Amino acid sequence: MKIVGIETFKVPPRREFVRVETDEGVVGWGEPSLEGKADTVVAAVAELGAQLLGKSAFAIEDHFQVLYRGGFYRGGPVLMSALSGLEQALWDIKGKALGVPVHELLGGAARTRVRVYNWIGGDRPADVAEGVRRQLARGIGAVKMNATEELHYVDSHVKVDAVVERVAAAREAGGPDLGIGIDFHGRVHKPMAKVLARELEHLHPLFIEEPVPPGNEEALREVANHTSIPIALGERLYSRWDFKPVLVAGYADIIQPDLSHAGGILEVRKIAAMAEAFDVAVAPHCPLGPISLAAALQLDACTPNVFIQEQSQDIHYNDGLDIFQYVAEPFEYDAGFVTVPTAPGLGIAVDEEAVRRAAAEAHDWHNPIWRNEDGTFSEW
Image (cartoon, rainbow, N blue to C red; front, side):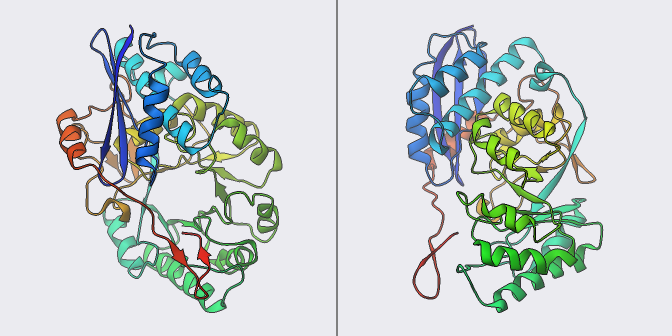
């Protein structure tokens, strides 16, 4: 079965899909979404994909090695997102051709469902309690929120108090059983991260995510020494080689590789196996679309140290769009869990007509640029 065609689609609100076609008519879909860099990653998919034309669709490991290592320069968000989407599509093809879901090709299912969390509020959540009550009414028992605004290296304790107030509102509305993930989003520097972690501890968060900006991983050891809250990170790490020093250093309790940024399904399976050896949990990052979520669920199915799955239902980036508008068969939810898809391949049926219609509209999404009160750049 040979690869004969590769197409990419930019679809609202901020996603990129790739369609890989074979000479036997089997089609696979992947999601190389890279938020804010759509045109760049589409070009990278075209460059990498050209090396796959005429090759076997089944040789996934070899294709990964060639695409990752064969261009001399390797890694980083652009190349790895492009590679991730292509890799997902190849697994989709292989599963469909063999008549099994992808997780059956990776050792078989270790679970039938996985716990999920939804987002509440935005970057400045004013209606946290209402957001929690809405999720509880849907049966969702865990949420995540951006509780922080712009923060300078050292900032006013008034801003710290505001963060605590918002998280306290979520705890009061959700009760003691609600899981609350707090995403610092890499926008908090070490001096304030230590203060925030201490002040939030009595509210028993599920985790704090990216407590310091990427590139400052050595600061995480000091943050970890100031709190018992589990520390999560990894959405801006792009391969097992990026995760290796994090795991060796021992300051991460939860890693969050993104299957659309970190090399795809098999690469994240390898990353998760490394984490398991260090007694570290996995919560795949996925604020993206249904193809990326389907890939993550295939990974979750066969990965025992996954404990929860992010998804983008209700996330503020969606601008009112339904994440399932591009798939003909939605995911099945019950009591805060999603059932692992068992149909062949990624387990979903992509609505190609809907994708092509949306691609005609395309998108040009970019994240906002924030500044502190003194005019200096602030992490978003």
